[in-house]
Length: 408
Image (tube, rainbow, N blue to C red; front, side):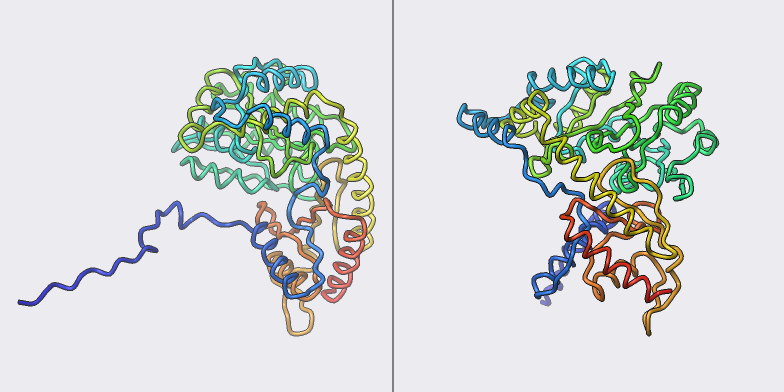
């Protein structure tokens, strides 16, 4: 009697459509490629990852060590320890004009998780989310994960990479649920003025179900203009979920601590979302975060001034390259030049058709790693992080100028 052939099990066929659609992202891909080339002995300058090149300030590190010694090594409440939620509420009221109660603050394992908590809490199938491009890569992917529909509105360097209010108003439909505003903005460095945010607030006020997700993670890296928290505008507090964290301004990327603040029903929902996929954030890191908020800010100022000098260096270097377009950079540590003049051109036998191909070519042929603008909804640009030493920045600018000159 013959035995039926057993079916062949293929793990790859078990993956969900969600997993198959997930992309590691251009930032990670370019950073990994630069590391691989460095491992082979290549002198690569990497301007890919948005990570401060400074160590976490000493008072914050000391607070973490003390918390360890005091036994803060156990689970924390999902929404965060009460002392930190209260400290954040005080900070938001005093610095940002946002009178959220402590019960409206939800800590997360990094601001990426805070973004996911917020979007998963208010967005479902059929809901539209207006995303202003260029945008941070997680926004669109998380909206799709939630079953929502991204409505991407693009802007150009000539518009300072800020979508005019009239175009935002025209994109609103009865299904619109959320507008995502990131100021100061990753990847462009753009900062929305009070008047520009008030124009968006007027749009929100006219639609009963519309809210704003305000990502303000770069608030301490502001060189020019005024930091205006969207929720501080008249009538906007209850309609705004404010995102922030400790990674950028306090150089605490590896500590993985972010937060969102919102009206209490939404805050409770964000806590429930987090409880499904993880627990509360690291206990002793939360104690250190209190020290960050309530301690001296000398190091924050020192880092910002270093970024300012680098910003000036980058703008001068990029503006000296014929054909490349770069606007002002009032905040963050990113430059986002428009490279459309170079796309479609060739260097020798190599034709560069896209910003993805341009970034690969700059890395492979000129030893400088950048990120294609396609990752941020702006395929005619590239992103450079100037969270790097001035020597590395100068070297990178020389290499970029040399490479682009070959493309005409």
